[in-house]
Amino acid sequence: MVRTGLRALLWLAASGGLLLAGFALFGAVLLGLSLLQRGTAPGPVGWEALGLVYQTIAVQALLPELGFTLASWLALAFVWPAPERSLLGLGLGLAGVAALWFPLVGERFFTVWQSAGPATYAATAALVAGGAAAAAWLARVALPALPPGCFAARGSRDIVEP
Figure 1: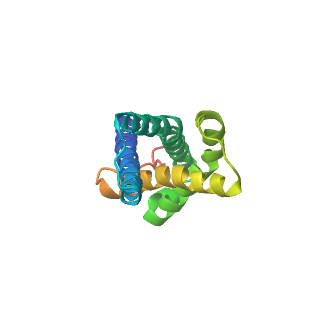
Figure 2 (figure 1 turned 135 degrees about the vertical axis):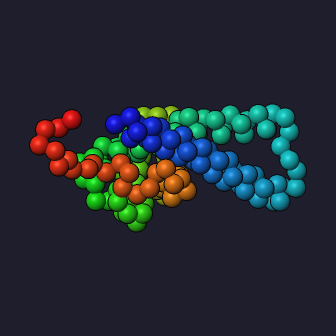
């Protein structure tokens, strides 16, 4: 049980790092495109505002989405271990669980965001839930300590449970 707990913490830390790094890269690409279009870099106030936006989105949307997704996946893998045992099942399952959590995260945690319609809601859900699921999946693919099936419940052959 301790080993599973340590693996879960490793998965959370690695996924969180990948999610924030991916978000920073996504923001840098958007900023680069904006610089090419406008031809000027933001001033000191602009850089401060960008940092505040990054921090707010990370704290209010991305990290809660990741936390809910991983916690739910761990519970799901315990009662239904089949999807946990393959990379495809893991990827599809994580995407589904993250998508199910987005309405709560978007409504209750992501307070600076307000949907302007179905298109913006779908785009934001894809970015937030998709980013959380992708980071969680990539951490499992990249780390040998987190192979597929490592969180699946294992049957016991003992007559008496230890």
